[in-house]
Length: 416
Image 1 (spheres, one colour):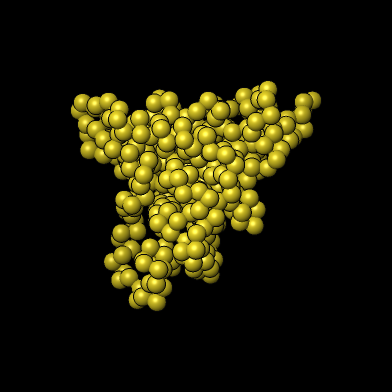
Image 2 (cartoon, one colour):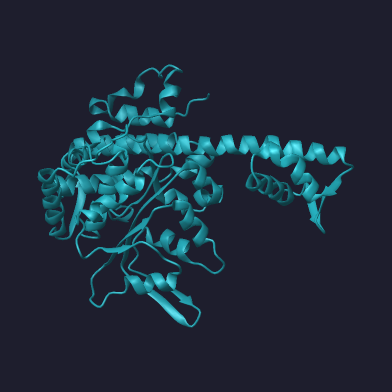
């Protein structure tokens, strides 16, 4: 397996003074670790450490899912009160997608901050949206405050499917509102949709298999997909009798939410030590960005690093400055996000490889039948090789879209 260069950048920045750029490359065995990376323990600092301790024994959900759920909740609570200039003004809002196996309790972790009533009232919680018009109604405010919203979707694939409905502009809104414009508007049928100072954050979950049923490569090249941070995590060992969250630690977390909800408008910046580390990290990451889909899917990781830095600085009380330790912790989460995205793309590659083998088998079968056959006969013969009707129909659709076959009057015709 060819090793990508980018993870070396993160390793270098995690060394004291960022001095490891000249070190020798890791041995090939390190590729094995990239397939199952470990979430950086030192990212659980301050309130994140308190929250992690509060959740011990309460659920089998991954600590990574808890980290993501707390991160997005804190970011939404901050809204536009904290910002950072990086060519444009950045806010802490973030789009997080946690993925793991079916039944890994990710939904339990995603719901926990809301169930514990940690999120303040000024944040609008949105769990289901059918149209941009309906979204505008949910986000409508009578006062002149920012439109801060936290979106929960328990299945990311459902959002993608709904966003592709004919005439839907939900994905367009989420793509453009990520940068928190002063206003977002759209002429929609007879009514004008207008949202003032939209500040959305998203928390969603999925399994790799369900994700790739609806996700397309164009989602990352087009900009919607690469606005998300994808984090993976494994389910913990079974807990026959889950306990209640540690109330003392929960109160520490609640106090942190109350503190940051009172923060006045603050412009964050790196302190001198952090600025030195950031400069090396940014330049090297730009120079060594991967090509292709992996590069497109991870092109905004440096933006996400800044956003997490702002959250750390807010809850740890160091604003307006971001410290070197906070930056290094954020970079390590960025590295983990990079490797998580890489593993998600590898699932897609495996699926495509299998579809490719089936496509060749379908074409060979048609050639043996003089280039034409009833679709029903073809399905009865080849569906066993596919395993299910859904796979059969997908392979046929792929061949039709690629121009290899034509379907006419319930017959499949081999073209060319």
